[in-house]
Image (cartoon, rainbow over all chains, first blue to last red; front, side, top):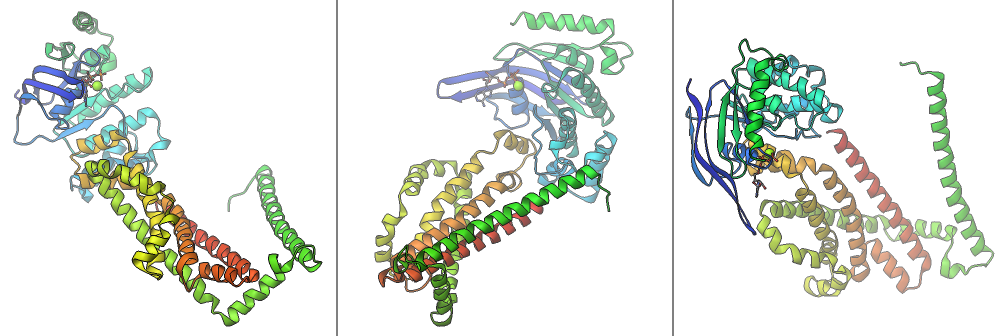
Length: 249
Length: 265
Ligand SMILES: Nc1ncnc2c1ncn2[C@@H]1O[C@H](COP(=O)(O)OP(=O)(O)OP(=O)(O)O)[C@@H](O)[C@H]1O
Ligand SMILES: [Mg+2]
């Protein structure tokens, strides 16, 4: 497999009046097509900064990002859903297409189909206020998928949800991503989530972040995230990563 | 036709009865007040020369209609108010947008805006008359001074209060600044803008009446001023009553427009 993203010595400093904050201290990481890569690391180590730099929301300070293709369309799902209350669910999901001047009957129908497939068809013409937290997060994911991105960035997409919703939604999201055949980077601070969902897990050091270690999650006959949690390999990787993180805190 | 339960029917009945009671009370209050006023001036308890009376107000109104082309005065006042309302709203929205677009410009003009807004504009009246002349333009300008700065400040504040998180979201979708403005800043401030328009129409009317009191030869403000100069209290009170009705009608119109806009999501 060839990398879709090749990140080399990527650095990011934030400037403010008190001085400089070094967020990323030289990240080296390859992201492969079709994989689900989780990024874990201590709180405040620079995980969001990494996604922001990769998606051009912030300028990098140093290093290089090589793309596997000429252009790569990024779908960035933020931590909070940020649905516009004055737009219906469908209109919210179409905003990316509107902005990128890609809204046609065809693309619109594709989004409607996504909503139908993932259990939101009945709510299409409702406003976000009538949805539960888990449903809003799912809408946010479909809004991200609507522009048909090559790679998905998910920044702690489940952190605002209660435990059960979180487990079931992560299962849904996993299925959606795999079914749509997307490459994805998932930032999370929940190790169980990382191990049960991912193909690989990258562990970041504390700030300024570098990639401490990358684990390939080898669970024979891997199945759905919830079932993965019950396997003995799950515990094994969980413990390994836990020890890695523990050393930093 | 849905069938309602007995409980719902009694609920609706109660609601309707309450509404009728309120209307009757409102009517009785005005009736009581007007009769008291009429009786007091008829029996000489109050001096009807100084405090007029409802019947004299009606007579004055009728003679105004017949002789002094009342409609022209009303028209002039409404016309001036609408002109300054439109200019203040368009200019206010435009300048607020400009300030949002250029944050540095906003920082530069911030103290000037604050000072201009808190300055009592009546104080500018004489200057405006000297500079622009004793005509309709200076009245409109005065009304503009009163409504413009507050419009700019309110709309700009609304623009600034938009959660930065929403802007980040649009940036992840590669939105341009113009798209952020169109898709987020304006629609999320719809209510603030509508409220601003509501305040604006009364501000403009205040400004116009102030201007007419100072300089004009026509309009309701002029009628009030003229009435007081020739000590015709009937004329003053009649004009004030007409002004109240005009203000109320304008409010109704703008409320109606608001409802239409809110309905059309
Ligand atoms: N826009 C910014 N300006 C200045 N400093 C920033 C900015 N964004 C982040 N930082 C700093 O950079 C460091 C890394 O922040 P970042 O949000 O990337 O961490 P994180 O790993 O995502 O944290 P968390 O686990 O809390 O989400 C923090 O110390 C933070 O204070
Ligand atoms: Mg973060």
